[in-house]
Image (cartoon, rainbow, N blue to C red):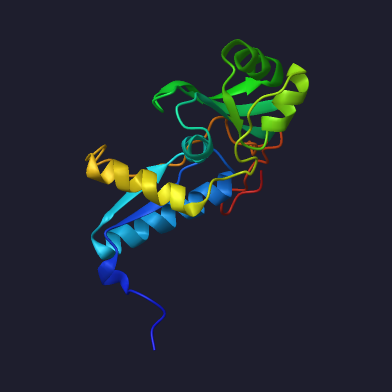
Length: 185
């Protein structure tokens, strides 16, 4: 018995490119690219912020959307999409006060894990879409299919979207000298 179509029916692989956890993005994008290579099909990257905005537009069509994720360290990963889903700002690292100013100025639908925080800090009501860290997988599939149909970035392979540098840094000031073979130093 089979549980569904085999790989022969797969025409492309959609993958979230972030922003998100460093390791999670690397694993997800690497797996998608590996499968795509093995199956001789395309891997298509969709950002988490684009997917959240698209899901918000399902409930609030024709509206601008500010997709925002709490990035910790008093930072927010944000992207603003206009009424036609054209990217107008970001994806970028911003502060809560900058995100609030953008929201108050433009009155977009808010989406993502920072949506309620932005609304509360603004002290006013906003239409709010999904408040999860990621969109529904069907949204990623739809956006990837639209990219494939439009031949957008046909040869471009998906890459993780890192909005800030890695937390891990090489140690400085603790370099030990090495002993050379046959010599005591």
